[in-house]
Length: 429
Image 1 (cartoon, rainbow, N blue to C red):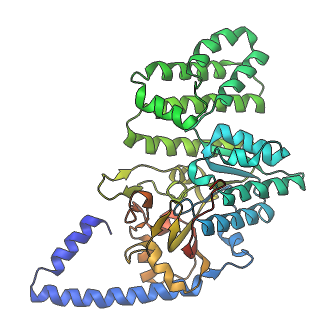
Image 2 (image 1 turned 120 degrees about the horizontal axis):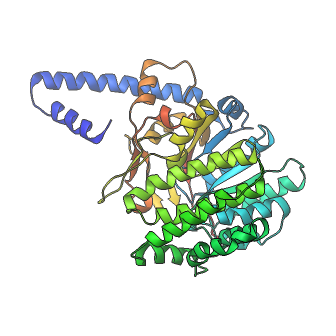
Image 3 (image 1 turned 120 degrees about the vertical axis):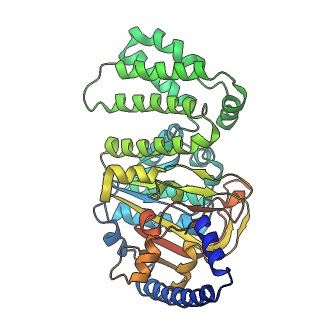
């Protein structure tokens, strides 16, 4: 139920007429009965986290699985996601990971998981702040361990453009010098002026976004780099060329994104993330695990964040594009929790009674999976699953923040729930 609808209902119930009071009493009894039916269905269908064999039924023939999390920076959910990823790799044949972080850094992490080359702590230390943790390092340690003993490797990629590093620019320069040296001077006229002049990408983002007043020349040069790369002759299925073009695409996305008004960046980012996941699926020729926040992985074309003392943020998210492109071959797995503490630290109180997570306490177990397509579904359950819902939003901006703009059955095929969470452990204290 949307906030405006809730206000109308309250006005009706508080109108003061005898008929209104009778109706309110009847509705209260009906609501209680529906809640009981929903609770019984949850308790009956929640499956404790054993060997995770229930995932086979929920994932089915998916080519891409969105593996979400309600918030970043909780140890329990990160460990649960790693368990799920291990199952998808070892039992269901997934061989590619698309991760909610930068593409160019991801190329170095891919090199590590394939060959062991590189300093893992240093690489993880360059991820977005919430991912610089021992728990995320365990993800890469697992991928490296798996690859060291299997011929059929798992590959890793970042799904984001937001910190495209100089290595992407240098890779394009090297490719053109090798494949089309007669166009190298032309390339460098556009490429070199926009190559980041700072090693600290966070500082470079802030410089370009906040201090550069005329961004048009940067966008034009980034577009010229991409156009030049796309004009280069190449063989069909030339993977070296495909990676080079993808480098150029991320550079263009970076400069274009940070030229937009802030409220438009949200939707731009998710549209590009979805394209990058699809590209990674096509390039890797393997089934992909898309590791990101629920806000990105859920099928939520009308997603909206409500943040205390601020305007709502609304945009079409990555998961909704992936659902349009893949249909039932895209499955959304949402990881949720009731209460605890996230990195910050930020204390997270129990989910309010009108949030989706609150009803999951009916399972009366610490950790479990719940397939939202499980049958049979009584009328009350179908109504609960298909009505507009609220779930935890952006607590770092206020713990009452929530995400809405869809129903549970639209957002997720499968929910993995844990009762309490604690913060992840930073690599450097």
